[in-house]
Length: 169
Image (cartoon, rainbow, N blue to C red):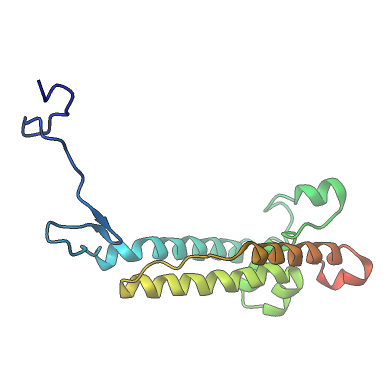
């Protein structure tokens, strides 16, 4: 029998089941034109990401990391006394959230650059989602990733040296 090894679909026939072709915005209808997701569906991911970031900054803005006992101490700093690239990040976020940009830069300048890059990326993501375009992608060549790593490493080393104490939190 020809249909013995073929799956049976919901109608009870032994015709093979084929999924509809998919386009960049979801499945293609029988006419071939892509079906765009609703604006609310497109905006869900960037809006939820932004809401999470705002909630985190609101919490850190309200609960001062300069007060002892609110947050754990960096394990690397506790064990070795060496400042990691993230040391001072919570103090930087607190200062940033309360509008004190000089204090935020003094606590961790690399973190402030990260906040600003995150804000720019999220704004672009929201704009593209609102207009119905594709989500932005971070597609850097390996040389750029190595360069970013080298800058963060240099920042970490310099902030631990006596002449780089201005970069220490």
